[in-house]
Image (cartoon, rainbow over all chains, first blue to last red; front, side, top):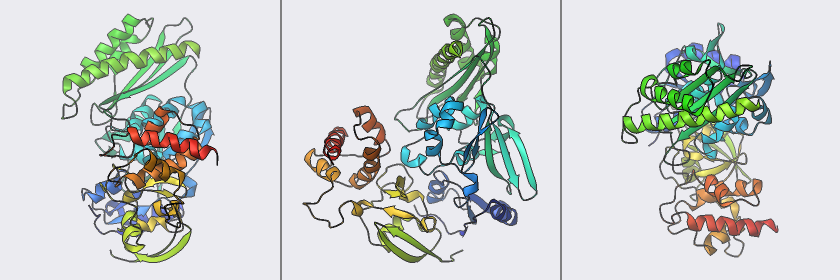
Length: 291
Length: 162
């Protein structure tokens, strides 16, 4: 349970960090909070030649207002996001999600950007970022580019980031008017990986019918899974208990194809997916009516 | 690969300068280099909480940090709770754990106390639910947690008067 040897660099500016990433390419791994990377190295499942420690980059630790939404620097600690009044005010879905991520000791060290770039299929934030149409700024020595959540999350533990690129900023746009949101997950113990989790947003039109809805699951596939057929069935509908129930059924039986393992069978995951969809859609609808 | 890095770390108020390999875990640095063995190592992958220390005042798991990352930072370990290590001067949190039988083998206790110290500062009058949430990242295989929860309630009452 001791990590293998590696070369260690601790840059103090982003430019310096990007130079290391460009120079070492595939051999280098960026070290953010390390709350997933270091356990993986302790198990020797990862043996990077070079670690570029980003913890000295104060310029990447910030939470700022951005055009009605919030801009979060990739090296912002999860605990800072959890405690931020700006996040609570402007993007309350993220505020409500943060306490579900592991334990306080982990969130004190783990970073917002590190969690997203790690793209664990059981992680909450990739699904929430997808539901909120977050945009991701990737930077390398040769320039920067913006990615949508769909573009950013590619596969199991895989993002669209090139070896020499770093995720530097995440922008969460504001929710449209008359929009409600909700998050829920089921795990065996508080702080464990969820068996199934889901984030939802619901936007109502002037007459109170469903204008648009998003329902994004995690822990049911290789990356965040959006229940597009379920939410398509809700468009233009009155969000009655029966309509929500029907959408939850579609989500659990048609939109997702969850794995079965020692923690939960396929049937149990589908059952949880349906129950959770019902709960979050109803909660998001109730909030949308008050918005 | 095995380049040594010189680091200066303040632990329990005292500055230490050492040369370390980058791969040396902070938990092993504290135990083997500095000789403070109150920080226990359980799972070594960030799950059990036995190695919890305060890093710049916040509880973190020392087994999933590298010692080299602590350069220039301030650490408090369980030894910092009762600097003279005397039984009469136990911290109220320690005294409460003894009083309520909040430990049996004691392996996990240091991690619990380091988690709870900042928690009680922020939450001087916590509910049972708050307490259970606060200790959710620390595993104890002896007590079944009830006596730990009791100990925290006693400690909160004791510390409120201070």
